[in-house]
Amino acid sequence: MTKQTILEKALALFMEKGYEGASMQDIADATGIRKASVYAHFQGKESIFFAVFEDILAEYVRVIGETTAAQGGESAPAQLERMFMEFILYCFRNPKMYFWDRYFYYPPAFIAGYMQQKTQETQGQFLDGITRCIERGIRKGEIRRQSAADAALAYYYLMIGVSMSVKLYDRETLARDAKAAWDGLRRGLIGSTEEEL
Image 1 (cartoon, rainbow, N blue to C red):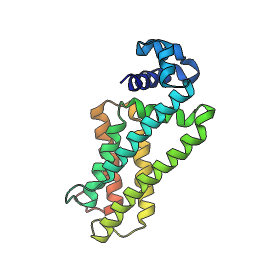
Image 2: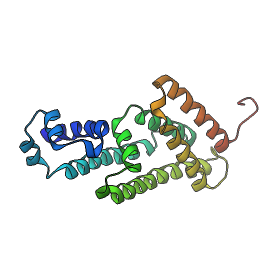
Image 3: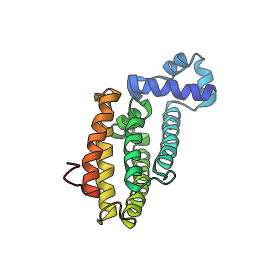
Image 4: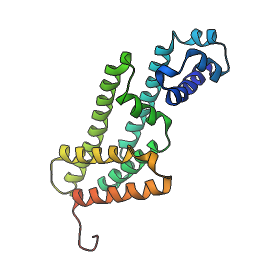
């Protein structure tokens, strides 16, 4: 349990003080153990930072898999709406996503390439799940015929764009604005009747 506590406290410190500003002593103090005990679990600050990111990555890959999996007999449009809203709300007040956003743009040099690679890989996994859903919807006539890959890109980047602004909102406002963004995209994917407009 101490190892996980170290990661949790280190995550908070890396967000508060930055990678350079957070010291091994800070991590030990926040965890409530001696610095030597931190070294019993990790070789140093680099290995702690790497482990924090690996922990975040493992959770995110799991979330992608769960979010993009079809549930029961839901239609493709219903699945796309659920995925969109679940992802936005997952990002809301989530320090792990804030960490990834911050250090993707300003990473310590030792992990920069790895973070970029893993970000691209997870983007690909998400896009694959979205594309499969759109293709299923096109086959069933639930989504108008179009390039599924292009539609998935539009969906993904709208979703990511909304998720990047979660710090600006309370949960209720975020859910309302995310729903409005989804409704606009839905009309493009499915088409709309005059009554819907």
